Length: 301
Image (cartoon, rainbow, N blue to C red):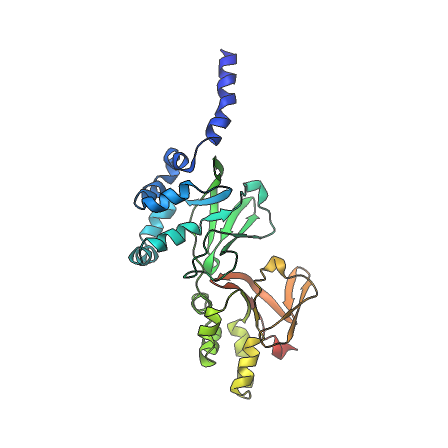
């Protein structure tokens, strides 16, 4: 009897590992809503069934219920199947990442979302993965965080984690800044007619002064010409490079869009760009990343 029980247990891991994605979804009660959603989009379900060497972040039933009752979901469905496919592709990561692979150092992992209608990042839009207080989080657009509630569900194409919120696809720079409350940045870009060029740019890093930073130099702005103000804003943009916080190394220099050098320093764990301190890092946007800083860079030199 013991031998029979042991042999049965020995077979279980291989049986579980042998599940394909379709079987895993069907056999996991917490994912019945996702399974039902995919059944409404057979072409998307078919493409998902063929992925390999991936990590899937699967929204729980409760997460999907909240999302499908939101205005965001209704806007997506009115845009057609491709929009749903793009959202789902943002939940598929290149490579297999088990819970133990994620640490307290942020990791920026590329996803299958590469539709230029939603992203303008060369290797595909990313999510930020980090472990904090023994919990695993994935940050997406607008600094939205999804907590992993169940880890390391294996299937033949990779590994799946269940999350408690649907990921937010990063918006363009101007929409992200507005949603994040960076009203002064939005106003400055509009005033200098830089909104569209910045939204359309590819692979950018932006150091966005906070509203308080604008207020601190408000009286001085009137002394600058339009061209000078444009130069100041361009000094906060790095073109052609997406530098997430983990890529900002001490004594590294970058060439800003205005042609001047920006110097990154790390002091006591804080990131400085020249003398401006990053106070909110890693706001993911459609074409790169925004770091909020506490003062203007050019005026601080």
